[in-house]
Image (cartoon, rainbow, N blue to C red; front, side):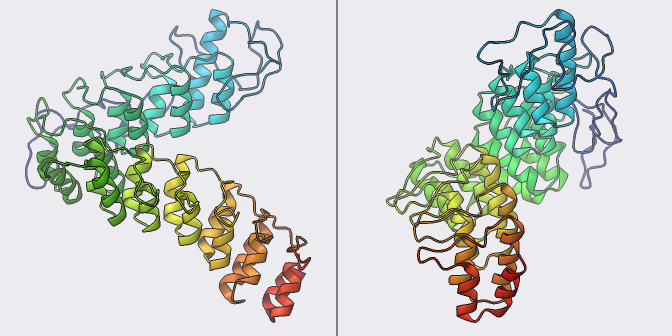
Length: 456
């Protein structure tokens, strides 16, 4: 069952003043809000009222055949080519309850296995929670994608007649908001207390980066911006001003007063290159192609990454920009992060699922230029992604070899050598001439690096 902390919702009779004195508290109209604690039942409830324990993802359903299955990427269970039998009614109840439990816990591998065995992403408990709706309110992007891939009813409603978009907007989950908009959800649905998603993001949000991103994504997605809320009679802009939210006010002023965008594609490319996130949103709202190309085949996301314009990149990623789009120099947004060394941009692109094996014009993956250039923090983070630290580029060099051959032997490159070795870099891999990293270090007089290499 759900529990709410004080202040999770304001009533329709709030007295709006300079300091926004919240006079009344109303129960949550989505699953939870920024000041809401959502607690799943200790024992998942079922739509039949029968209490069941969580069903382990690898367990064989009671009464079913003992078939060994394994979860696949899309969530299907493999039985050597044959599909599993349809679960009985009792088994279905247990599977659905277990899936909701996995959704609350953000246990994606278990959820995949359960869906593969027939669990329904739309099945609700007595509080009208489904795995799909839980994913939207809790910001579980991987689970949301799993649910959408397996028949989620995108416009399904919770107990407050709110959509997943309203739930996600209230919590400031910009990536989830973007995913839902691209899935075709009703952008302007009004819930039981008269709020659209944009109202919830402002009136019940905060003046923080996550909510700024969320509002920008809603703008980009084409939601109504001037409709007043039912009871307060406030537009999103007036709400932002009443709350004293300067950042959200700025976004909404721009969105509601900007001139018409005559050439959306050109406007998007220009906005991304200069890092104007609000202009990026408006260009997308005007119909710009998110994969538009400039004369050098660079996409808006690649331009934003090159300039390390993280705010603009976050909007583009949320709206589905491709992190692997190649330009005429064989660069991609992901590859460029290894050149700039921006950890913030790396984190921005990871939810887009970049191809970690994509190669630049020298045949290298992103960790190689980062190691050469001494980007310590980037290397520390990127080796945690599973990228191949022993990849050999067209010059015959690994990241370890580049750190030694093209580095300066100083503290930064010493740290990088340690990080690569700790991540499994093979010091025995030699260059095309048969010279190892240790031999290069000795030849260059990099005594500190040589000592590090000798210890592994």
